[in-house]
Image 1 (cartoon, rainbow, N blue to C red):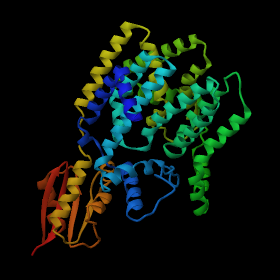
Image 2 (cartoon, rainbow, N blue to C red):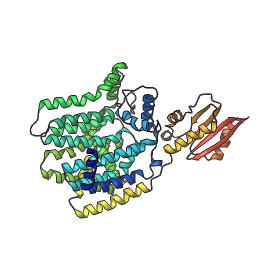
Image 3 (cartoon, rainbow, N blue to C red):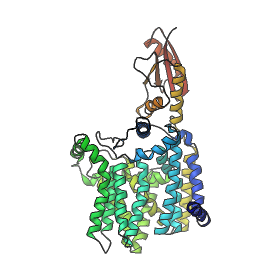
Image 4 (cartoon, one colour):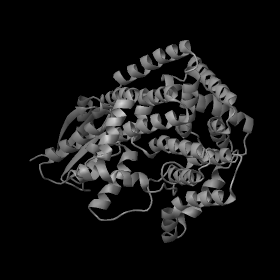
Length: 468
């Protein structure tokens, strides 16, 4: 009854939010069948769910990162136990599960910004998140980085309540930061540093609260500590290897210019306008600076959190010697969206121009979206092999680009047809060559075998069988 009453009140009082949710839902459902990739990032939690429900095993670590021996915490995998259980371990429910999380994020964003700023800023900010094709793409990608935005909302709200004198929210915010750093992406540590720096700007501070907040942050590492203890300090040793290999001694000024001009600013521009070109980058920067100017005029130290957040994250990557992909700045999208929202709400002409360009570009990107490979194609390919083998043993080789050759092993397992080395039939997944050329090539490689090429849905499957 309480939930129903809340929904009724929400519908009656929050018409703008309902409007945004409907637009966001339509854009997220459109072409969802061909948008879910089911690559490496999605296969890891799928295997974790299989181990949990079938083998009754649960792991204390999540996905291994690009630096070998570095692992995330398990939360992102555990979250997906829900849709995998609901769909009988098939990935079919995953994109719809993430749509629900996306709609929930829109609601939380709108209500949070309405409390901290006002209803107009909340409407603009949540509309940007709901409509941005980049935001929708992050959601469809189904990886741990997606949850950084929701974590960011938690940090913002907790710091706001802390500046109102409610100390317990600083502890809660520290815990949320720990959840994100451990389970979603370690680079969220820069957002955590910005959170703590801004907290120091409050007039009345309490040492006990800061110490308690430190413990709240660190407690999230407990699963990794247990895993590390069980595996001869593997995580601890790899952490020091990471530090030693990625401590930079380069020109810091040159690196900072590169990160700002070539990485972060184009990323923000692309999020808003689907383009990192100079003109859109300049517009994005101008809107961010105007938003900072308006917030500085307010004179509330809490609002300094937004520019501090962006600056600390940017500076944090300067000493890092390794590659800094643009999605590392996904953690700063919330302050960027808020600064842009504050900027455009102050001038009706700027607001109208922004809305027209933003809507046109992002809705067009959603409508024109296409991909050469996705979960549906992979599922159909796996079922094609299983049906074509007719109960006989088979093996599978993948002659596919690295970006599209993952996910198949789990699908064979969950659909009940596991490839076996030395199987009676052989299937080779190919990508670019025409079917006629493939048939001729493999007839030369396997003389005396029956070679056929089928399943021409972006992936071509070469079947090699004994002649009866």
